[in-house]
Amino acid sequence: MEGMVYRGKAHVFGDDINTDYIISGKHKFKTLDMKELACHCMEDIDPEFTVRVEPGDFIVAGINFGCGSSREQAPLVIKHAGVAAVLATSFARIFFRNAINKGLPVIECDTSGIRTGDELEVDLEAGKVTSLTRDDVTEVTPLPDVMMDILREGGLTDYLRKYGGFEL
Amino acid sequence: MGMTIAEKIFSAHCGREVRAGELVVSDVDFMMGQDGTSPLAIEAFREIGGDRVRDPSRVAMVIDHSSPSPVEGISNLHDMMRAFAEEQGLKLYDVGWGVCHCLLPEQGHVAPGDIVIGADSHTTTYGAINVFSTGVGSTDLAAAMLTGKLWFRVPHTLRLELGGRLAEGVYSKDVALYLAGQLTADGATYMAVEYAGEVIDSLSVEARFTISNMAVEIGAKAGLMRADDKTLEWIHGRVSRPFTPAEPDADADYQEIREFDLDGLTPQVAEPHRVDNVRAVEEVEGVPVREAVLGTCTNGRLEDLEVAARILTGRRVDPRVRMVLATASRQVLMNGMKSGVIQRLIEAGAVMVAPGCGPCVGTHNGVPADGDRVISSANRNFKGRMGNSSAFIYLASPATVAASAVAGKITDPRRMM
Ligand code: SF4
Image (cartoon, chains in turn orange, brown):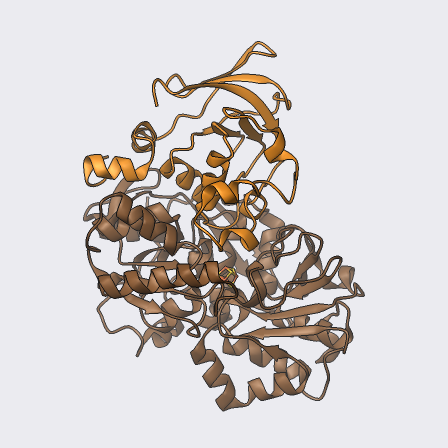
């Protein structure tokens, strides 16, 4: 994850997007094939999402993104749908942890000014989101060091393979 | 300044005083995965290069979400869990044992003062018996199986003091729903909740589980209560190892304290499609229902069945309603057979499926039709939750579920008492 800078288009959702909306239970229990599951990402609230999204795009949401179950399939299908990062005003804590563990950057920042289609540049190390469309910069709530380290390794499995345990 | 229950439990595990906001690496006393999350945990465990689970006696895997399996894909994932459990010598609760959150306390795996993780969001349930228990994802479970530890941020605590006395026909589920409505779905995000006050004191341990179960519906990391005499009596005979309950200090440093007077509380209903979309039953009465669900980790224990049976005895489920009963565990089922409560529910027209999650999460056992309205004793009513995004789920107490099943429409249970 070189430098951790991403560029892409925003797809804006509302508040309290729960994990059942991200990937419905009726699909997720059946398989570990994330490519297959990724076709159902956001299906119940936006059936066209997987058609519109392009590799490197961002999901942008309001408060409490990822509330609900602990299913790790939620960040995984987002990642497999090609999404580079999720930006939200706030996240539910299990989703937040899972996303980092799976190497999906989650960015807590004020998203109220972002509209669907906006071009964004996200710089994780610098902790800022730049809207290329609107020409403004938003500060990101910094991640704890342990989470940045996990993200730098691309997720918790690689982190543990490298360090063998947790380093605070 | 004194310490909260969460700070006490983390301090005891870290061997030094730790405070809210600190990042710590802590031993995990017990860990659990269910059939929706264990397969990914096993994959992650292998990916990390894991060979042996650090301490198999601290791990359980539970086949409860799609149990028995409805399709071959799930059957194969269940087999993956069986093979891993056998290889590692860890406890597997196979088809028929019940829902993980009923089993862990019932089978004596968790004790006051413990730190417990579960790869399921409703792991907050055991907070009712003073366990710091929280939901994690599969990779965190894999990491903890491998190392015996996990990193945590010691949470700040929101204390909820619940005063007053619950009226007849009003149950702990109504309290949980009321709090969800008042605090909203993210009212306690990143925080632990401490529940206290006369209302909590008056409740049975079974009824308390319902409240801690739904702590996650207000975003909480844990839903803690102190261990009182009722707790210790309930634990007695279940847990054989020594344990140390954590008492909050009188001058503990809370993020916030909120008081609620529940004297006049009436039965509550969460309307679709949000758990915090809560109204008094009076405002929702009359909505026709086609399915009624009694069970789940929220309200599938013996007391819940008894409450429903009291309403259903001498009455019949409306012929247009499918009433699905799933006991939260085999033990609940057996006790219910002994007491006759199961007989009464079936006689009244309920249909019983295997102990476990039942139709709660939409994989089987009662997927609603398009446009169906469902009254359920579960904890979530998100669109699509029960497997059909064109259905509408209303959450309520077992009493309200039973009364609504009889009437064929949402009904105040106090009319049938
Ligand atoms: S009963 Fe429902 S909420 Fe409880 S663990 Fe099972 S699926 Fe989850």
